[in-house]
Amino acid sequence: MELQGAVALVTGASSGIGAATALALAAKGAKVGLAARRTGRLQELQQKINEMGGESLIITMDIVSKDSVQKGMDHLIDAFGKIDILVNNAGIMLVSDVERLKTEEWERMIDVNIKGVLNVTASALTHLMKQQSGHIINISSIAGRKLFKGYSVYCATKHAVSAFSDILRMEIAPSHNIRVTSIQPGAVETELSQHTTDEKYKAGMQANRGHMTFLAPAEIANSIIFVLEAPNHVDVSELFILPADQAW
Ligand SMILES: NC(=O)c1ccc[n+]([C@@H]2O[C@H](COP(=O)([O-])OP(=O)(O)OC[C@H]3O[C@@H](n4cnc5c(N)ncnc54)[C@H](OP(=O)(O)O)[C@@H]3O)[C@@H](O)[C@H]2O)c1
Image (tube, rainbow, N blue to C red):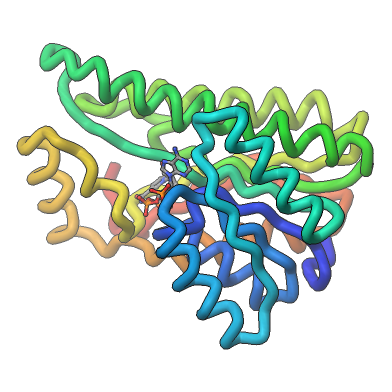
């Protein structure tokens, strides 16, 4: 896809991989909807995009709420007239052993990582199917391919994202000319692990930093640009991208 002038919506644009992806898209000349709940962080990102001469729109959105998603999508379409690219990036990771029964955290991960992705996808598909073109990028994870003790519900949500992505690709790529890609990163240096409340796993994730070089969010953003810029007849359906020294 030609990114100059394309319209993208990036969820979870307020930090980490989402912010880096929004910047990379804006640098390529795309108009970018910056969606997340922390509007202040989106304003800082918009400032950076403005300084680069790029174009963006702040969309305060909670992807768990269908109403918030619909309002955000309407705002994007009103401002830019269309959507070509959806980057379903927003997600949370709350790690603990099942026996600790942190059921509220399980539900939150299911709400954001699964239902949130479905809410935003449905709202974008209405426009993409009419247009008969576009690209949906879903940020799954190594946890959407492999299993790790302590990551039971996170792995379940990311396996759901990987499964949904591939079936979505089978259904809508041939009939609607909409490409679908699941990006599956290993360890990336972001805020993701900070929300885990279990001290054992928090310490374990911190210790990982001592024996591998986490990827930078911009390295995932670059891989997303690579996938988007592939010729229209090429669908990179999955991209598994890890630190070279990640041994699991
Ligand atoms: N970091 C890694 O090692 C890694 C590896 C594999 C996959 N991933 C995946 O990459 C994606 C991005 O994560 P990250 O690593 O960049 O972490 P991050 O810095 O914590 O970013 C997560 C983003 O999700 C947004 N978000 C959370 N709940 C939301 C909601 N209800 N509505 C809208 N936005 C919401 C947050 O924004 P607000 O709080 O402002 O709403 C934030 O911008 C996630 O799907 C994650 O699972 C990360």
